[in-house]
Image (cartoon, rainbow, N blue to C red; front, side, top):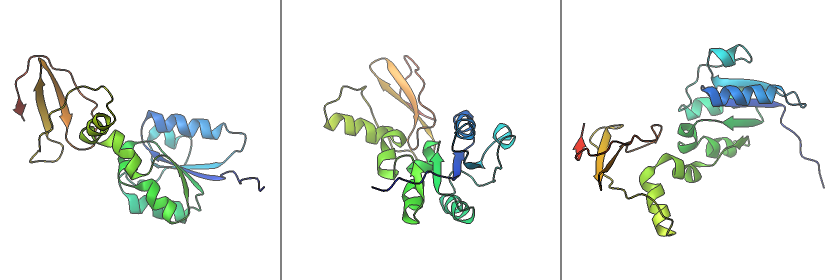
Amino acid sequence: MTTPTLPRNVLVVGSGGREHALVTALLKSPIKPRVICAPGNAGIEAQVPCFPISADNIPGLVQLAKDKSIDFVVVGPEVPLSLGLVDELNKVGILAFGPKADGARLEASKTYTKKFYSNIRFQRQRLLSLPSQKKHTPILIKIQDQSSLKPMDLLQVKGLSLPRILLKQN
């Protein structure tokens, strides 16, 4: 049995506190990998080189990983996961930590998740899903004296409880 090679060149994708913590933890690793980040933030940039490639620019991130000889990518935010970053990295032989696009759907789509839970009879809140004319248009949904504000696509906003609000689209 062959001992697996540990990653020596790591790309962290994202720009928030979670990614900053991941970079810090990787730098403390006894393996001492070379770490870079995209897009990063000022705090991360004080620790490792950052590249101005948006987390939703999947082709750009794959190209960066190839250009910098990255052998392992840690994906923090849900946007690149839901857009298939792990799938695209795997296609070019680069390992990544995070679910593929089909697995990321549970986090990315409230409607999909509610339907999934319904199919396995998992108790959940009721949901009324309404189409939106504009991307990211918030929808207020009234269900038994309890409303939630949810974007219809990727759930970067996790929800806001607004009691006794009538059905309304902004």
